[in-house]
Length: 331
Image (cartoon, rainbow, N blue to C red; front, side):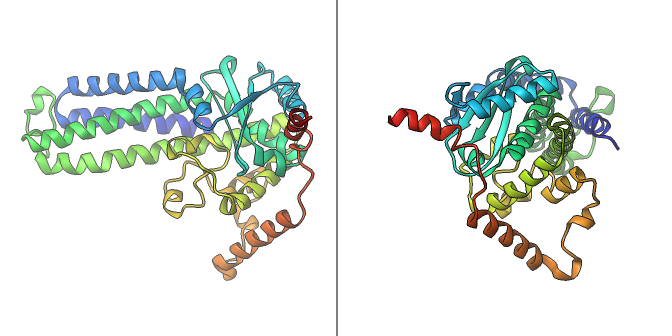
């Protein structure tokens, strides 16, 4: 199933869940109110979330003077992708990562960490930036906002269901639009529905990551740079934890919470091994450790990758971008 079709099906599932929960509670008015409130909350998020998240990570905007190579790469990729030039930001954190934000291509921003500029060579950095610009091109921020609106409506309806169960709801006449099942059914639904909505929202986010990988590889001209960058990002994410909020984890190219075992259970990102395998045109089983080696084999591979990265730092971009800025400031 293609990514576009999968996203459409998942969005339809969220819509059906809203309708079913509203029917179960027994009032269409409650369903409409919950949907409108959730839409209002996410409308604010859609218009102002870019400024909020950039301020949250103390990102500073750079231009062709203080970040010439980074800015030049973004310019080149935008020309290839036929996109307006977004604002470019650098996040003062050592953990390598990146994200894109903005409500549409005309109001977009791309942010990378200082750690990414230090640890990626040009081809890898181009792959990461191309992936983020692909999110802008594919309007994934709009899709994420719609999914969040629907998931928010479902969670509000679940809260209404709990209160309805407490006060004896769930027993209206079906002719009035109410559902059956009594208080116990409402309580069960109020627990299951938010979990189901969260899982569907995560599935939408994962499908958009696959699409951004494929689109970004086209912008960069080769998938290998992004594939190698993902390998590095996976190794570093376990050793250099990022100070990130779970509310914004879905925005990054690699889940910044992947080093935390509990958070990884609810990851909004597909497995890195699967993403890398798809970029290289391989099956997942060909890119993984043989079954008889188990998890220890994967740990040995990650450790070897880290040793290679730590022992010999690849020529990065910060020494030509950020450090040039610092040198100017110190002179």
